[in-house]
Length: 429
Image 1 (cartoon, rainbow, N blue to C red):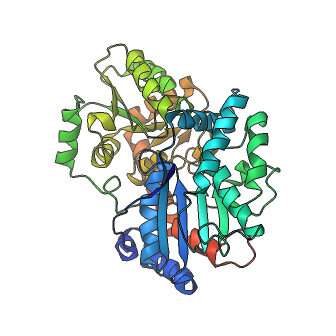
Image 2: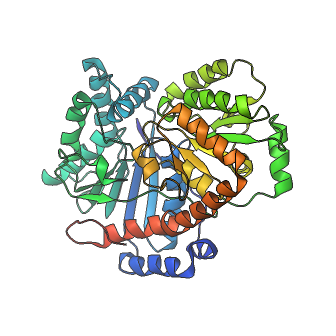
Image 3: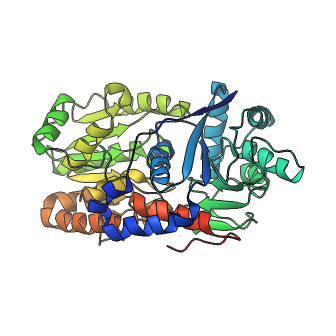
């Protein structure tokens, strides 16, 4: 087993100025001034499918444009069973009562230890290990510093574990296995302070994710083209449309979305629902859930369950979000929820669950709605469908929220601020 470098497309900070403002671009360049040439290594589990990969496809090239030598590597050659175990870890960290067996933990350790030998050569100045999959590997390589063994130029690096998961209520038995490894890093990066339990003894920084306003998923789609995309997937562009875009994951409560749609349909018979997602390499559970959702749709022609396997990619997702009358994100747990941010950026009214990642973005009643039940979700959807002016007002505030807080330039600036510090403390941007 080893790591493979991910190729990323060119992405220039100057191209973000029309969206984020020239001041945001110049602020990022100022923060990068004393980091010119610094070597930054990101390691994650998969090059596509899910928010982490999407973030890195933007942040890595922006770091390069700012003058840093940033690289991104992913795990290659791990057995499929390993990703089943790490998905179980993911679920347990979000509170699912399904702990690891001793055999599963042994496999996790075996794969992580075998990855040490394949650690990408440096020297590195900053190493960011993303999520639980390579967590132990990173700590093992980091440990080699104190023993005087320089694994791929690691001795000079500052090491961070970056967690994108909602860890506000982790399963204790799984977290007890993992948090000692977190504490072997120089620091941890979380999306919300609520995710940093008292067991984390190393300094903690809070960095929220972002969307790339220059990406095909977030650019304005020509209205005529958007209609063509919906029609191609048997969705009527002239009828009300509810859309949830997310990985096929039980924490997103897609079955609850179908239930809410059915309540709404009793009042708005013409309403349609599109559940749009992607299947990631590190998420075998997603394939099973996709099939279950198609079964739950029960042959209803107004419910479309679509994935990248159907040809729904970035531009198609943009069209669905742009044409949605309501964007839904009915998450029970949510690390952040980039699909919420995407819908907000498109000035669509968003109805979302009460998960921490949703509450980080939505102020209830001002730039979207937060709901605690299927019935409440349906009621808010009906309110928006019956009062288009309410939806328009929420959408305007939503887009401005994203512009100020959740674009790539702000995300980059927070990383640069963290890297530029001496003794680690929370970045101030």
